[in-house]
Length: 102
Figure (cartoon, rainbow, N blue to C red):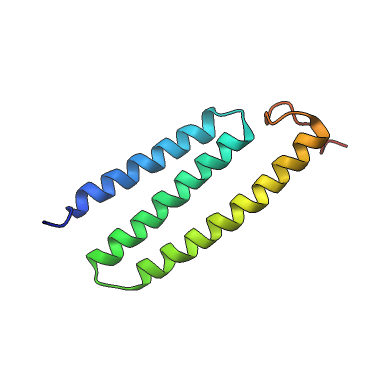
């Protein structure tokens, strides 16, 4: 089985990043926005692994593991904030939340 070409992996990473960016710009639902951020972080991790493989460095995989840990922390904190906003504002739509306004 031949390895995947690096150009194809970079194109896939670019597509995942663009999908995440589109999700961030078009979603009103806060949970959908969190999923879009996860896609963007996964695209960055994929780029680190691909270019680490290209230049034969282990740092790419180390950065990818750091990004995965960061994404897990972001998901936990983001979901906690969304749960709190849902209880206070009774909605998960980002446009409707004005609880933080003084």
